[in-house]
Amino acid sequence: MLDSRDSEGVTVPVFFAEIVIRKIMILMKALRLTALLLLIVAITAHAQGEFSPETMVGLKAGINLSKYSLGSSTQEWAQGYSAGIVLRHVSEPKLGVQLELNLAQRDFAERVDTTRSYRKRINYLELPFMTHITLGRRNTNFNLNFGPSLGYLVSSGDKIPAFDEGDDSSEHYPKETDTPYQLGLCLGAGLIQKTSFGAFSLEGRLTRSLNSTFKTEDNSVSSHNTSITVTVGYLTMLKSKRRPRS
Image (cartoon, rainbow, N blue to C red):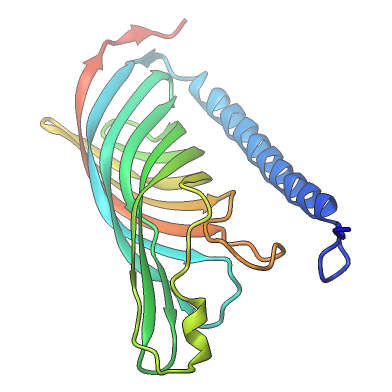
């Protein structure tokens, strides 16, 4: 008869229930933060006399630093790149939505020893759908973006160092991905400068995945991805029509 307990005596259903509870707690905290930010924006926007709804589209590109929660002391921040298309629509004073389609590298890097390292190149096609908040007036604005992000694994590859015969380290490589999908939460802040020939943006963003990326023998070990991305972008106006505040 199969035993429903793992090696540490914790039942499998209880273990997964704890994971679900942690995810729900994270989502509840994100919802509370969203409600607070929307309240602040609503209060500040109430005093504004005129408003111009606007729709902007553009391109962005930058550098991405990635790390996984495997608890390995030899893991390093892996540098990659991120680039994509941005669609931003601001329909209310200081409040709108921002939709992106990005190709992002969420690599894994680890030192095997002082002379060798292992690297796994992981490329995701990501679709962030975020609440967009604009603070400031005229042509220079501070922006805040936050919301969920859905990623799909489009490719991956391994750069595996040479191992000597009998080296126990070789059994840990390559690392296999557990699922092609990645669901995460992202929070970004930056500046946008509007000019007569378009708008230029600079943003720093933190993204945290809610599901594990790699297969692990120990179910208690997760591999959530944390990424820090810095991008610059250029956007052009598609629609802008000034209307009085009701």
